[in-house]
Amino acid sequence: MHHQAPQRKDENALCHAQLAGPENPVEGTPVTAPRLIGSDLTDSDYVTLEARWINREAAIHAKLRRVDSLTGGEVIGRKGGNYAAILVPYFRPGSDQVREYRLRRDHPDLQYDSSGNLKPRQKYLSPPGRSNMLYVVPAADGSLLGETEVPMVITEGEFKTIALWRLAHHESSSRPRFLPLGVSGVYKWRGTIGKTVTARTEAVWT
Image (cartoon, rainbow, N blue to C red; front, side):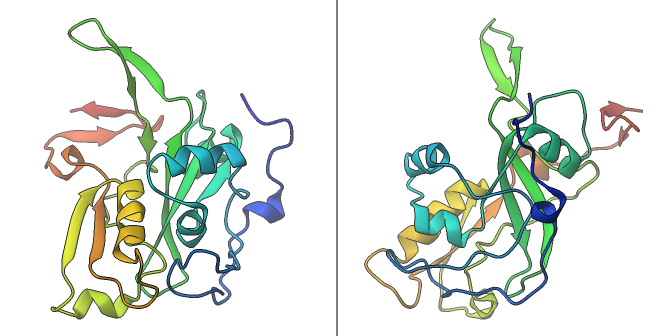
């Protein structure tokens, strides 16, 4: 189902202007968000994210966006499903250029597992053929990647990475105590042989 008023074309345009706002998610500090695909998160989104220890300031610094089903499907090149979601942009460290987007769907598909339990599937989606990328919170200074004295914490998923970035700045508004890095999924880093993607974006074995 789509929203009654899908995002307009100008709302979906990328802006390559210099990002504004402070580098670190200091609570209570106003942030100017760049023009990205989608619209601002809803109050309900912020409540859901707070349960993951991602407050409003951290979500804004991560440039998280809200997309309806039509826009979400266009982002990942899919049709025939519900792709209303929170949109997670990937940036190159220290850059305002979006590398890619990932969707966290509101209503993922459901499938019975081997025990007969109904489980969500395809909760997080990327465009077809997109290789795995490390997720770095946009507010992170790219120079941190080369500083050996700054510990790194690797976790699974963008939301956990954002929550860890907030923790790295907890009671400290300047330098983070560690640099969190996220992988899109544990099994997505396993190699596959003979697997291809069809024109309908379906993964099949050849």
